[in-house]
Image (cartoon, rainbow, N blue to C red; front, side, top):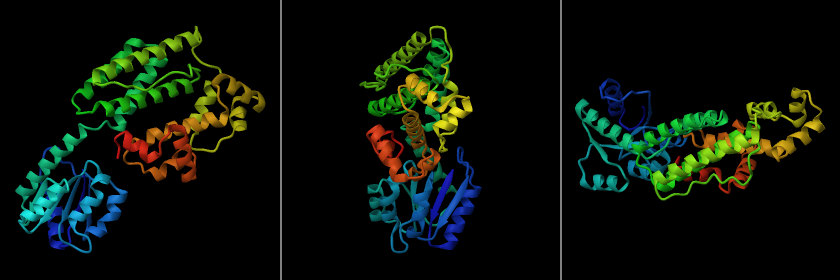
Length: 346
């Protein structure tokens, strides 16, 4: 658990830190505590980090606690905010509720009161997490389906998706959000299979549009089977495409500025011949193919809450952020930030 404390009274702040380090609440495993005296001092912390529980005083410097919450509650997403005050004021409590804050901790802070507050915050975190599908869950589904589909194992692919579907049953997910996630998984899955050397049909539609979870699951399963059938037709007994090694090399060095000549050299091929072979097998030029892989990788990274949008270009071999934004929008029809909002990350 990551905790941020905003309190201008040093004694109160140190006391709260000590209590947090000593309370015993099931599920509360303290990883770090950040502290700031005033609301304005906390802004850099809120902009750069993500917290599970945030304690803030109402009074303070130029900005009060309620103004801070109003400005940064959306950015902090799942964080549970706790108002800390020496005033049992209905007006303050009412304003806190309007800001979406449910916890109000009165001074003096006791171990018992703090423990009860933390317990309720943990319950609030658990409830919010039910409404979100994490990047690690998506990665696990992609890995399982990618391997089973590539090996044409329908039974294993079905098992992987059944496990996923069971995990999703306990989550409170809107149909639109769930379909957005499944559409993203299907698109990435299709590109991953294609990147291994199988030129699947270009007209494949990966969008999942349904009015309910069961219908969405059925559509997704059918599309997985469709990809397996396409692979079976493509291979006709051949397991690996001749230029799979080239594609794997590009994928492994995606964050570097490798050239067509370099890849051809690694394979012992003439650059001109490799260029023609690559386009014939993939339907794309080397540069366009590499750009597509970078954008797919960017989409994966955008699903990870702990990675800032501004850092993503450097992780995929693009050192120009405006160029990345322009390329991503051209590729997906959305800005990086817009994609994050659609996928429920922000």
